[in-house]
Picture 1 (cartoon, rainbow, N blue to C red):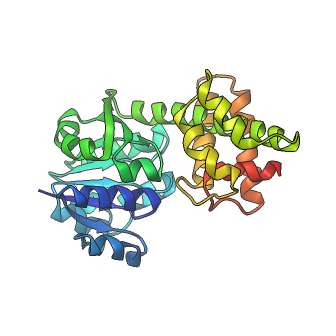
Picture 2 (picture 1 turned 90 degrees about the vertical axis):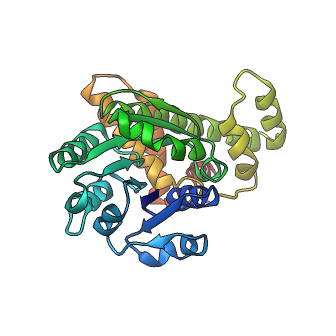
Length: 284
């Protein structure tokens, strides 16, 4: 069975290559088609439009940058809706629940099936098949996509109704974004106090706050290396969407709001295309 894949950015490319290495056949598309060249080298074929990909494949996965891109791929000319009748569509992008529901309703109205399945994890997790997949929507499509999910991730959750997956992913990102800012402040405090930041990493790793995020990002942050595993501008987008969800549910989120402002400052100083850990540079 051939799977469609829309989006060949940092995450989409890593996920596609992982699927190809495990024997899946892929037809891929990206707004800039030249970004699919590396995937072709791994055995993928290229569709000229999202509609062409959907027409060819039983179900299609999308990993796109933001809600605007997710809507465009579905609703624009030569978009997903033109060929979705009798097909499945799996959105693995991080978007807000309202956008996910809008896409779901349009796809169902055209005779297609929809599953939202945002992921927790960055480039390294995608390369290693260690993402956490948070799905909701059409249960039969979820079960059909499980062989691919088992390659892409270490665990998949099915939460029920469309929108629940999107909300859960935003809750996860609130914690991650806030943690990264606290971690950055701790590193800056150690450095400015004349301490060895590598020793701080060792102490943290042996203590109660030991976690995978610090272990993965700490060594590169100490070296001021911020090759993107997850773009800072996308983390800020996720924080913004999470704060909007907080407003809707009247949840005070002062820590997340402060973290969002730090990411915004980083974008204003030209760090948006770096890894989200580059928020640390705003404290230098």
